[in-house]
Image (tube, rainbow, N blue to C red; front, side, top):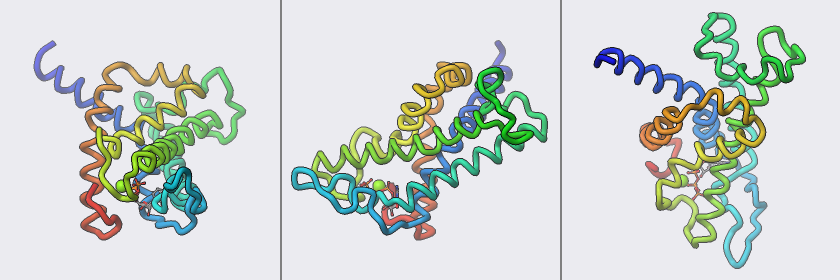
Length: 205
Ligand code: CTP
Ligand code: MG
């Protein structure tokens, strides 16, 4: 493979990886914007520390997740109408498994996959906060081991793999995993710096 072909393949992989994970990136960024009030742990503590803390709210979870599902649905509609088969990632599974023609160009399966990625990312964020609280770290502190950067990716995978393994392993190849794990911290950093400058986020991480 010559250098030009290699670079082209790499760019395509980066683009596809970003496209597949997009609902999870959107739900996480949107949760911050909703600035909820009702903590998901309802203020409850366990062994003297908050279960999740005030940084995890029902409004952020529900509305952030819906925003991610909306983004994924827009991606799906774009693929259908623009006839972009190489990017119709969310519909692969559904062909032949369950597709009750929910909507002419949007299957129920595609919607379910999108919801898994979107809410899965937020579940990863909750797990991270749970672990931080158990480690005695206050809300908003920087976590060790890239936890703040990778929680979304790992959560989305953890929820989507058991529910849609067929779809998942058809869409994700080994290079997608690598690229997503490398790209997530960079994206996270970029989005957070912008959010921080715009005043939507208290800390730049
Ligand atoms: N947020 C929310 N609901 C969620 C997730 C996030 O309301 N489910 C909002 C909160 O206002 C939160 C902000 O987004 O403070 C930033 O999110 P994040 O960095 O994940 O939370 P932290 O405040 O840093 O708390 P933690 O230490 O638990 O990560
Ligand atoms: Mg934080």
